[in-house]
Amino acid sequence: MVLAIDNSNVNLQELTIHAPVVKVTLLEDRAMVQRRGKANFTTGLWRIKVSKVTPVLSDKSLRAELDDSLDKVNDVRSRRRMLLAKEEQPEELQAALTEYEELIREFEYLRENRLHHEYSFGQFSKILLKALEEIPEDAVWGQLDPMSWRSQFETLFQQLRTFRGEILKNYHEQENLAETINGLIKKIETLAHPGWIYTADIEADLTITSEGEKELIFEYLVPNALWRPAHQARLLMEDNPTVEFRSDACVWQNTGEDWNDVELVFSTARGSLGTEPPLLEDDVLYIKEKSSEIVVQIRDEIVQNTGLSGDGSIELPGVDDGGEIRNLQGHEKATIPSDGCPYRVTLFSFSTSAEIEYVLMPEVTPMVVLKTEQDNKAYHPILAGPVDLIRSSEFIGMTSILFVAPGERFALGWGPDPAIQVQRTQGQQRKQNNLTRWNSVITTVKLFLSNLGNEVREIKTTERIPVSEIEEVYVEVLTDQTTYGIQADENGFCNWVFTLEPYSQLRATLVYKVDAAPEVKGF
Image 1 (cartoon, rainbow, N blue to C red):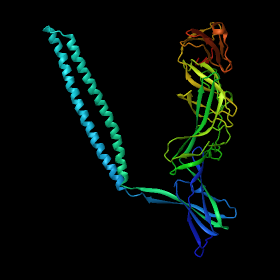
Image 2: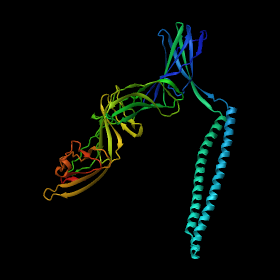
Image 3: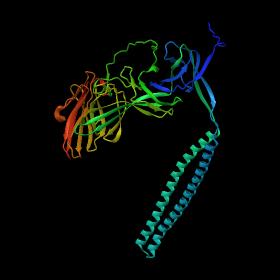
Image 4: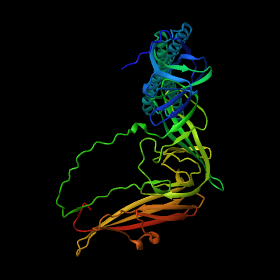
């Protein structure tokens, strides 16, 4: 049943108010926009209108609210319409046409200039070729003058280099000018042929029970807006090394309306995941006879860690919040135009002392990397994302970081140390025991480190060996042939701490053996 209300005898008052965007809550792939507007009302029925709202807003999410609980919002809706864009501006169009003519003349001048230099380059090339052909003839007639030849050839080559430089210069100038002309042509077409603009308005029907100034709040969801964490770390190498860490939110939005001087809230809620359970399917079990052969293969396992302690989870493709929804407030109000470009908004920052060490993983890369370990001194977690690295005042590159809880210790890599040179070689030797028929592979890894700098370096070096998961394969480090008799940990990592004096060299060796039973295949 539909209840119809006859408003023909009701005095409905209409008003258009200014309700700018004051707050935006950004999610992983959308945004909740809040607008606020004030007006003086008398008692009765009112129809309030807010103009020039983004047409991509979600109608289902649109809601309105009055600050006075005695008043009532009867209905709120959006109305979309097509508007003809403003007509061409004769002055702006004429200025664009004048600029176009000037650019065309400049382009033609550059083209003629380039053709002239190309012609001159060709003529001087012919003169050079003729001069080279005359040298043998002069030599036959005894007219040997090396100094004169050298002077002539230097002049010719100099002229050729000058013409070639001018040709390249004119060519690049023509390319840049052509891009400018194409952009100006599009502008002229836009000014000469106005298009249509798709816009929307918000309408709200109110029942006002008391007079006075009241505030009206509108909220709605919009697509084409997202955010991702982005960080910046600055290392100060002083007597007490410190790291200044700043966490930002990188924002993109192309919703059709600019957010000017708005309060930004960044949420890690993932509404796009949905709440529906998965469909159940049959899981069929099969019986298969166990093979007498054991097939083995080598695979790489990633040891997941958050910070420097605890087991981490696999990194999500979106915003990783550690499993708990968080709302992070922007440090200050910001302006985000609707242009699809990235803008960074500061969330929080802190300064912490850092422990410095030099690490080497030669199997991954033959470089010694500067590494720092520091604590998260912020009250908020550091979300997974890219990190811009700055040493003192110099940008040196980028790295990435996983989720770091408040107070947790985490590490950052600051690039290779150019003073340390590393060389790694690896060899294998296979043999079989004639009695047990067990197969063995002995692997020898040799490292050569050289310190070309004038400072002492303590280098934490890590090599790895395979880790067996079955009894038929046994792995051991041959400590008598390995430098310092190092043993591997449960993950197969062998760790040394080498000290290199200035302008010194060091050699290290790791030898390990892998034994496999006769029935093991793929070894």
